[in-house]
Length: 61
Image: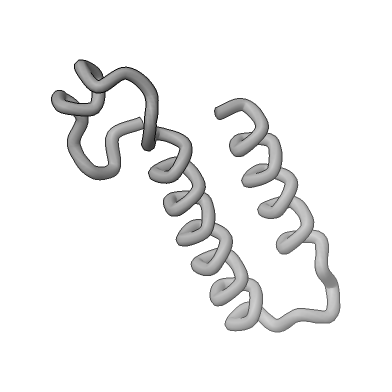
């Protein structure tokens, strides 16, 4: 989870520091980064012990 957070915040700083992109392009890049982060967190929660899996809901972190 820490690696995902580091990549997410690094992506945010990279998007915000890009001087050539317009505001709309930065917004689209941010939404794409957010979607990829949600997918990564959801995939990292898959697997593990079956007892925990039976009590987890989609999107739990």
